[in-house]
Structures are given as C-alpha cells and as structure tokens.
Image 1 (tube, rainbow, N blue to C red):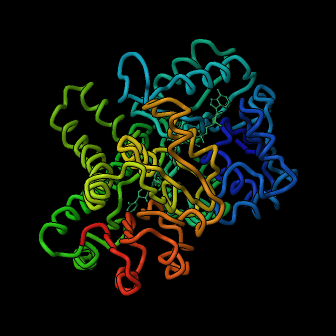
Image 2 (image 1 turned 180 degrees about the vertical axis):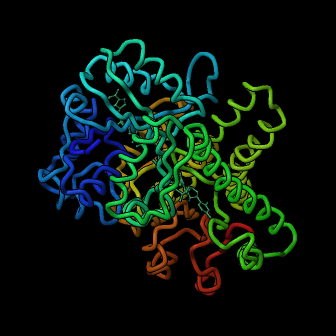
Length: 463
Ligand code: NAD
Ligand code: UDX
C-alpha cells in the first residue's frame, strides 16, 4: 500500500515527538496527530515554540520545520482516522486504579476506545499500529473489536513499540538502536509490515529494522523495560552495601561496566528510577505472569519494584537520621523535581515520594527545577492524597531562582541530575545556609571533595 497519510491518536510524550520526526523525515507523507485534550493540541499549535507541551532538546526545531507543511495537530479524530492509511495508537496505558488487577494491570480502556472509534469511522482498509506499550496479546483484543464492529473493512494490526527515552527522545528517534515491527505471518500481514518498514526506511538503515511476529514484538517492549529497570535496582542494591562497607558504588559500577558482557550504560546508582514506564510496565509484566500461574517469574520481577521503593524510602530516612533524627520545621531544598534531566516530565519521579516522606516528618520543602512549574509540583503531591491540599500547599514552595531556594536551608537534596547544578556558586549557597550545611546527592552529580572543602557535609549514594 502506498502510504500518503498517517494518523496518530495521542499527542503525548511518545505520539508528539515520534510523529514530528516521521513528518520531518517523510515530507511526502501527511502526518496528523490527534488528541481529545484540546489544551494539549492548542499548545502543539502555539506559534511560540517555547509553549509546545513537551520539552525535549531539539524538538522545537523539528516541529518548526514540519508543522503546517506535512505535520498537523488536531482534535478532529474521526477525520484523521478516515483519511489515513496507517493509524498509530499512542494513547496512555496507565496502571489500573480500580477493579480487577488494580495497582498492577495496564488499564486498556483508552486503547479499546480507540479501536472502537477506528471501527466506527473506517470506510476503507487500514493498518492499525500499536505504538503504546501493551500487554502481550493485546493485538488479539484490538483485532476482535475491529473485526466485529467494523464496516466490512480489512484491518491489519502491527505492533511497533517505542524505545525512546525522555530527555533524549529526538536523538533516539533520529538514530534508533532498532525499530521493531511485529505483524501477522500471513501474506496480508507481511504486506502491512512492509508498508511500515518503507516509512522508517526513509531514515533508518535496513539492518536496524527488525520484524517479528506480533506477540514477540509486544513482549519485547515489556522485556526491554524490565531489563533496564533491573539494572538500576541491581546497582542501587549494591549502593546500600557500599555504604556499609567502605566500597564506592561509582568505582564498583566502573569496574563491572568494563566487562563487555555487562557493559557500562545504565549503571548509575540513584535515589531510585522514576518515569511513566518502568514501574507501570514491570507491574504489568508481574500481573501477566501471575495470570498464567507463573508465580516465580512474577516474584522475580516484582523484586525490581520492591528494591526501587526501598531506595526512595532509604534516601528520605537517611536525611531524617542525619539531621539529628528530626526535620520538623526544617527547610530542605530540593534541586530537581523531574524524573530525569532534560525533561519537564515528573511522572513517578522519586522527588514526589521523598517529599511526601519528609512532609510526613513536618519538614518544609523548597523546590527548584528549571523546567517544572510550581503548579505541577503541588499537583504531583496532591495526587498521592496523603494529606489535605492546604496542608501540602503550606509544606512545599517552588522557586524560580536556585540560590533563593537554598537560602536558610538546613539541607539540600539533589533529586534530578540537571547539568546546571554542577555550575552553581556553591560557596555562595553554603554561606546562605543554616550550619551545619548538608547536601544529599541523590544522583552523585556533584563533586563531594570540593563541597567538603567548602564546609558542606556531603552524602552521596553508595559511598
Ligand atoms: P501521554 O499521557 O503523554 O499521552 C497520551 C495522550 O493520549 C494524552 O494526551 C491523551 O489525552 C491521549 N488520549 C487518550 N485517549 C485518547 C483517545 N481515545 N482519543 C484521543 N486521544 C486520547 O502518554 P505517553 O507518555 O505518550 O505514552 C503513550 C504510550 O507510549 C504508553 O503506552 C507508554 O507506556 C508508551 N511509551 C512511553 C514512553 C515515554 O517515554 N513516555 C516511551 C515508550 C513508550
Ligand atoms: C525508559 C526506557 O529507557 C525507554 O527505552 C522506554 O521507551 C521508556 O522508558 P525513560 O523512562 O524516558 O525511558 O528514561 P530512562 O533514561 O530510562 O530513565 C528512567 C529512570 O531511571 C530515570 O528516573 C533515571 O534517572 C533512572 N536511571 C536511569 C537511573 O537511576 N540510573 C541509570 O543508570 C539510568
């Protein structure tokens, strides 16, 4: 099938950047990204590129090049579905908060709504692509909906999971390690796979485009995230042992990372991983394993989450213990709130949980993050429903200036590894703080030796 029009349902962290890059690299294809969220679409269409809803280095330039040429953002979902030959589904698949599988399974209601809408609207044959991360065998459910409520139209379902990481989304999309496309083994299925391969071939080398059956593709995405998160929990587990034994986790990580079988990436000890994917996808994997009666498999992967929760709690406990077992009415400054640097995304950020623990101990938290608004900080805390909105508002403040945020603080906690933190005038910050002045570096990004020379009591992770 010659592809001239693509539609993507979901203008979020995946749909927006992914489609922007497809549009940039395929000027002959009209790409329309649709969403029910009018505010989000209006922001994608904002003339001022500083206002597009997602901060990713390099994204504004790509949007600027392709938008209104062959990249469109719209709330007219039916129209875009009707016109497209390929429809990507890139809606959110959060952990269920109700009913069977609550707290574990992926909530597929948005996926099902998309499938029903496509079935209702489509008047000619379509390729439907799962871009969202989904439980293995979801394509079966989508196909069943499309085949039973459609207008006699033929649908091919492909799985094309997205491996981009936030903060590096544009680079990951421009130079992916691989593109994975799963489809039916039938002739029609293979033809659909080829259509999508042809789209990516506009900028990705053939040897990096991997095709599989649908189930392998769906499960590979959950597996990749589980392996990545497991590395972080593994290094974080060792960080606690380092703190007891005099070993240094950075040295240990370097030593093991030089083994080519282990590799050096993704071995940075931290306050715990955050982000919208790792926890959600592992919980989903655990749920799937349990649903097949594979209890040992489920327990094995659940341990990755248990370790991560422990690491976050351990960080807040360490702050309380070090500050003479009380942080009541003490000002603790958080540098960073986003779940990692170079993004404005705060979903599941460790900062939220550490703040919550410290507010339980009656601390006063001051936050500075270069990309996160004060409203977002408060919304994140309120979402936990630990205490009243007023109580949260009285316990946490956000600042536009890091030096102001640190003034009179008893301690600073580094929650995100923003590069700018390394460049601060730490002597000036030290002079403005209560003494003794503590720094808890949850990302091991600052120079502990220099800070100690200034007079700080510096505590990193795993040393
Ligand atoms: P997101 O919440 O940022 O975006 C999803 C968008 O879908 C929202 O704007 C929402 O309004 C819209 N939406 C929901 N239902 C809709 C409907 N019926 N019609 C139209 N729009 C609808 O989510 P995201 O971070 O982009 O993640 C999307 C999927 O991609 C998830 O399954 C996630 O697991 C996966 N994923 C995310 C990342 C990441 O880094 N964020 C990376 C790889 C994969
Ligand atoms: C992750 C996967 O990397 C990506 O392939 C998938 O598509 C979506 O989920 P993302 O969550 O955006 O991407 O960022 P990632 O770089 O994986 O970081 C996740 C969390 O782990 C962050 O909180 C980060 O700070 C933390 N992390 C990462 C560590 O603590 N140590 C590390 O060594 C690496």
